[in-house]
Image 1: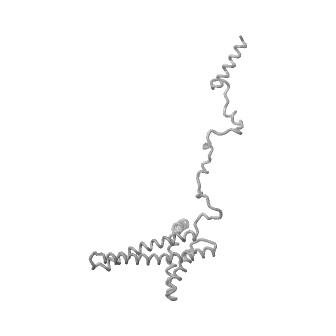
Image 2: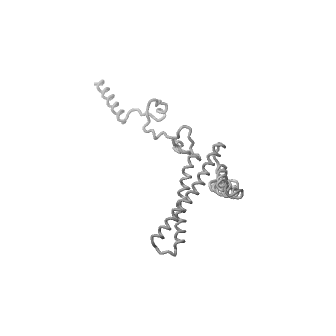
Image 3: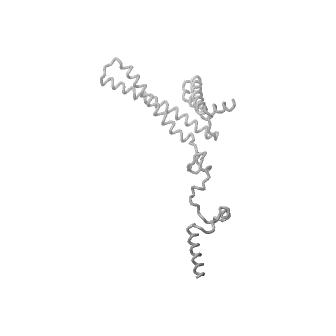
Length: 209
């Protein structure tokens, strides 16, 4: 009887301990030294350091030997195409203006429409050719200067713009070369100043403090 009673108590205690009701409990201090090797956590997202979630730089896969920024050779195609389209659009608008001005005394008829259309196409092709040629020269000089110096900075932009203006106006003699170089120098200097304006403003604010 006692043995059966003892076994019954053991069974009851075992069931009670299994369901968490009764029995000797364990404190956090007792469980602190228990090794957890080989035990998986409840969720991998609970053990993430928030510092690793903040990325200061862009992460993307690059081909072997490629740079994170596009060089002048890659940008040359975009520059030339953009200048050609811009010149064509501007020339078309200018041709429409000139065509309407030259035919303002004519009545709306087929000859007037043809004359306006010819002026639009002529001016569009002229301006597209002009800006496309300038972009081609600028891109070629920029690529050569970049490969020669081994660096990419605003100095390449200013030098390429100056040389482009000088070569484009070389048929006008020495005075034309000087004017073209000065025009290229002015335009590219303003472009470089615009690109670095925020950096220059921040530097001036830090110096004033």
